[in-house]
Length: 270
Image 1 (cartoon, rainbow, N blue to C red):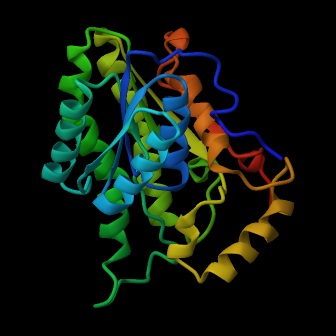
Image 2: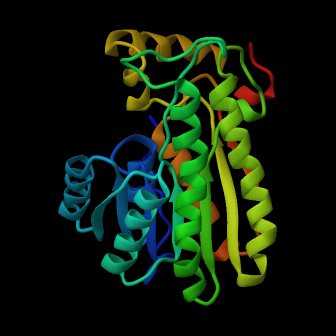
């Protein structure tokens, strides 16, 4: 059994620091928020559904951690700015931004949306790529105001290293996140703002239940264990530990990194 990121935290390395995690209401985003908070960070969990992030933040406060909830839709410039500015007000500034909000849609590129579902190109690009751009743009002034030592971590995907059929739109959006990460790392280095990305493989999160029935999602994940060289699909805490590493001020010489956290899946498993 794997330990949680909180259980392996090594002291208050984030004491006095503040972080916003977009998509922080569940899954990977919530695990990241919990791990940073265990390290002494004050966190804001951001998401479109205020009731979801409020409940998540309340659960963390019940553990004695410093957490608030902020609402906003990062797929629009105004929504992203609302979320970032509210987080900065609530926390007294920002030292870290973790861009974790995302959606996943699979299928051939030729498939289009219908009246019940937005065009998958618009949906995925708006959230997974433009959402990172908008939230980052809104956060940069707050990060610069901390006068050095700030950090941005983007959650991408190992599909950008080892693509699969029928994931073209999602992979393209995440590849844009990879390119943005490296470009911004160069752009913001003079401000001592580090920019890195974590590229998860298949991770057991609620996102699969948004694209298939829960029983099918469970069977899919169980069946995928054999496809991963390390013998299992990932857990949210696997990704959270990598984010903690990249955010840690002790690692302040790391920027522009694209860190695969996928159990070796991108090495060329079937």
